[in-house]
Length: 319
Ligand code: F6P
Image 1 (tube, helix red, strand yellow):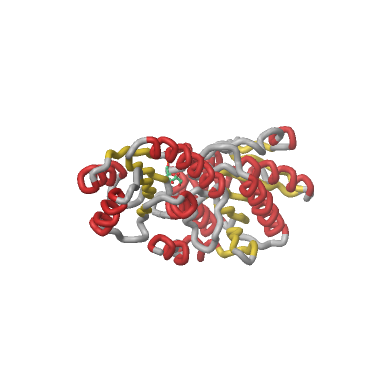
Image 2 (tube, rainbow, N blue to C red):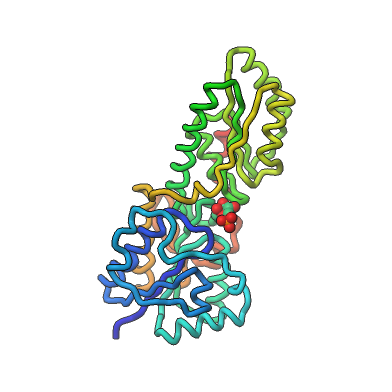
């Protein structure tokens, strides 16, 4: 008998989810599985918003950001009675395997779901925050970094026309990855992230000296998780450095945009590993990626190990 497999997207959407959905449908069919979409994340699992899908549903989506099947941050899925309802819905449709694209919070919910109902699943790290333990790459990061790069490059054009400091705030929740990589690749003067304590006073003399020696403008990248907000940093530049300042909070544009080549390829590979794993009975795992390639990690270890930002990248901030 043909087996049924479902996929859902949970938490903040990322560019790369649509290419992943396309690969999911095509690779499932190729493996003689019947693919299902769960709409709006765990909410759809609870409300039985689960539909059989096929090639025509994924035509023309590979180049689109967001997710065709919707995502959500489900509060109800935190409650046991709704998780039971979700399990019953999967059971009614004879769905024996589940693929989940999501971040840390989504995997915690999935872990709990598994502990209670022993459902066969595979998780794919998908968050622009890149803050999941055990994997160096989460789907969507490359596109997000490219969106940030475009924004910083554009801001640099106007920053260099005036004598101004631009404070550019990136997303990332409590993780500084997006800010740090953007700093290293855009040549900004200062980067402030939650993982590295800072004291603005330490930069005062250096920045004043640079202005005296001809510097016209500053680009500063801050992560949304630092202790001060971007406007406070801008005020410091005006008060202590004596340069007019502006703030740009990049916000949700970082989550959108046409998926990059890297994210399309990673989506393809993540899904292939997820389905291959499930077919080989490698269950209850997250597909992780490191320089040595893809591997499967127990969800327990992934959700219960605090994420650490790459120390080498951090060391570049001060060097
Ligand atoms: O987790 C992804 C993320 O984009 C974070 O970087 C950000 O803090 C948060 O989601 C924003 O969430 P929302 O879309 O619910 O405002």
